[in-house]
Image 1 (cartoon, rainbow, N blue to C red):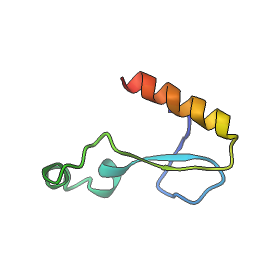
Image 2: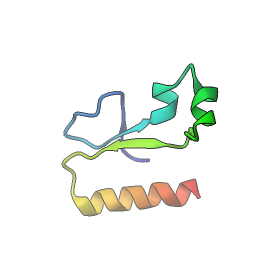
Image 3: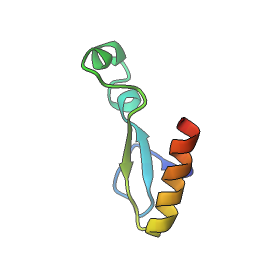
Length: 65
């Protein structure tokens, strides 16, 4: 997705964080056993225009299939 990637969720720009890969990096098998997918992305929305964010996320979902 065309957003910033980073470990912090407190910024003026929208951030995307691969949740399971970041939080459970050493326990991925355990996370999967509880139904947590590596495809989970945690989003922290910034102050961009809503229409811009909707378009960005729609593009990302289209690419993801």
